[in-house]
Amino acid sequence: MAMIQPLVSPAGAPSHAVPVPVVLSAIGRAATRLLAEALEPTGLKPRHIVVLAALRDHPQTQSALGEASGVDPTKLVGLLNDLEEAGLVTRKRDPADRRRHNVAISELGRARLAAVDAATQRVEQRFVAGLDPAQRAYLEALLSHMTANAGLSPCGADALDADG
Figure (cartoon, rainbow, N blue to C red):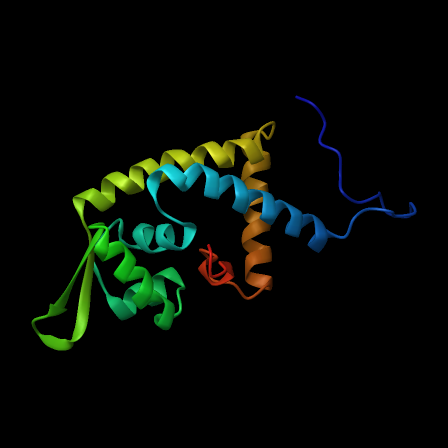
C-alpha cells in the first residue's frame, strides 16, 4: 500500500500546509457534489436519507424522529411531506394521542433506501480508497470526534444546507 502523505508538516518543520478547515471544506464540497450525482437516480437528497435511515429499524413518533435524526422540527415537516408524497413513508395520527403522528418507512421507502445505500457506498469507497481497515476505523473515530467538537448531531443532519 502506498504511504499516505500528512496534510501538516512534522513538529518543528516550517508549515505551509493548508489549514484543516479549508481542506475539510473542499472535501465536503466534493462529497456533496459526488453524493448528489450518485443519488440523482433515486430522486432523493441527503436530507431525505437522514430521515429514512432513522426509520429503517422501527416506526417513530414525529418528535422522536426529529430527535433521532437531528433534523429541526420545522424542517422535518417539509421532509416528511416530500417523503409521504413520494410514497416512501406513512404518517398517521396516534390513536392514543391525536396530537402525535407516527411515522413509518414504507416498502417502497425500504427499496429506495437500499438503492441509496448502494449509491452512498460507491461514493464512500472513492473517498477511502487506499485506506486499510484500521485506517478507516481511525478516520471514522476522528470524524466522530470532530463532529462532536463542531456541535453537530452524530448523523450530521444539522450541517445539511437547504439543498442537501
